[in-house]
Amino acid sequence: MYYRAYLIVFWAFFLTYFLTCARNNSKENCTTTETITSVLPTSTIILVPKPTSTYKPDLNSSECYCIQDVAVVSLLIIFGSVMILGGFKLFRVTITLAGFTIGCLQINEPFESYPNASALYLGVCIGVGLVFGIILMVFYRIGMYALVMLAGVLLTLFICGWREDFVIQNFVYRSILALALMTLFVFGLVFTEFIAIVLSTSWIGSCMIGLGIDLLIQTGFVDGLLTLLDFNAKRNSENQYHLNQFLVKRFAPNQYHPDWKVQSLMGGIIGLCLVSSVFQGWFNRGNRFGLNVIRNTNDTISKIQ
Image (cartoon, rainbow, N blue to C red; front, side, top):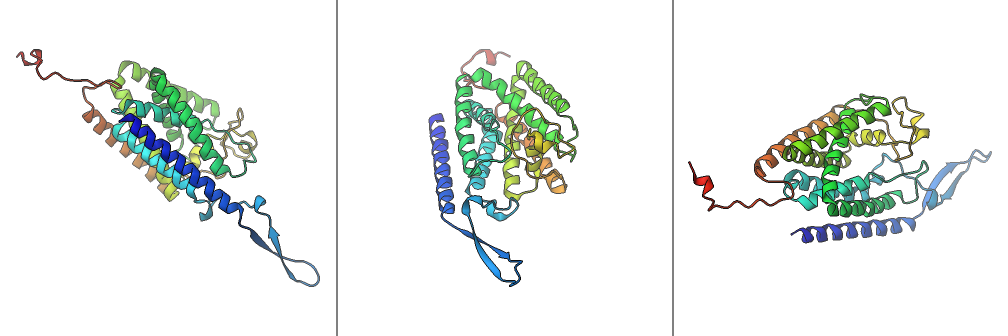
């Protein structure tokens, strides 16, 4: 059953990347024109062709909603659904998805970005994510700890995303909070493995689905995550809430304003996590993560009054 799931995911990745490259190649062949009003005494209007290589669409326009966005939304919702419904049951798939998510978070971006950035980042995220996923699937014991630590990191980002000033403004203090929550989840894995795995898979899956919905309806929740994960010193010097001046990471073009739409989405994530935790706890009661427990109906010990 597992190899079929991996085969389907592989072909989905391949088809998505192929369609993305085809769409970008078709866009390179089109040209655009820019109307410039001349300030010469004749007051004529000159149509100057604008080179395609320097064309940069508005980040807030619908033109940026392309095949890359559809692919990311689809992957987030599919992976999130797997985590909230079968995260505890599907051991190998869960560990692989945890490694895939961790690998995708390792992508870096310079201040000036790259050409064809969307297609490039999608391909790199898929490639690096698959590598991390396979590594954690092979070293599954490390993958179990990586799973709960990822849940701790996402919980930190979620807590800081409730307010416009991110609750904790200092990067060092935010890191301490993340380490504390990661340690808490690790202790939970050591002492109460069942509860820790159920909560971790439910939370990660709920965050994936919530992020996918936000990218689809654009409430603004993703802007907070981009800002919190931005480590570019030049950009951070222009914002009073950014103290992340130690590394260079990804691009956060927008400011974060958590209005009622963002908070409603975050409330939905919490509700989905609670429902998933109750369902997985009930459905997998008496089982162990990564082990198939087979109960013997002919066991005479259970019949002793």
